[in-house]
Image (cartoon, rainbow, N blue to C red; front, top):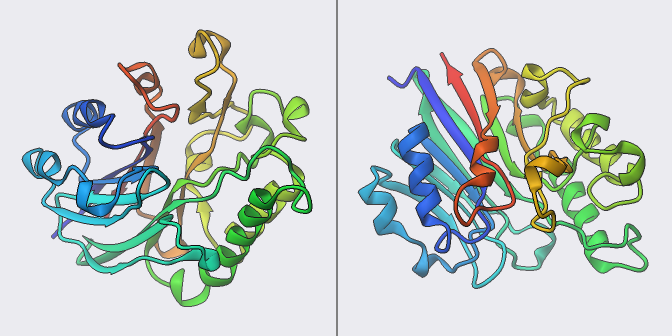
Length: 269
């Protein structure tokens, strides 16, 4: 019986390019399950051999050439694999699996929500409209039967909902990822499904909490102009089992890094 589960979610920004730091993460953190976003390769080119060598025999991959892509790799068997096509555009942005936990299963949703472009106006920017529509579909689906069971939703959700999820609330109010239309819809998605924001359970609201730092800063750590774009939500039946979350900030400074840091979540029966 699996009574303890360590899960990592990470926007890797090309899994083939950054496999060396994925292997570094595996060596240092030893997660049971890894949820990757922005893998940027079709399923046939996913580095399955490297993961198998590292002990991750079980994989649920939803990739496409050059863009998007999500993958969940695991030391534990994965069942009930589901890949949902949001907005009927054919993008690879979601995969869900069941992972053995506590004598039953934990449903794991792995998401890569559209970034939304630069202009926060759906009439001027189709990408922003797509993002809002995507979140709307999440709200419609991720409630009721989907949240009546132990479940966790992780990934790069591309919204920083709270004041201290960004380096400057005032300066970013008109910047995509922190605009009121996004943050309000994002919270509606979460609250409609009864999801708990696990990361904010372990880090008080008044503390800054970031998972992403732009490549544009010469010294990302000193500038520290971050945003929390990566999230861990748990359904009410799983809320008693989540024991910790942690942003692995140091990984943002590893060699040839992603602009996102991994987030670790630990579940115990």
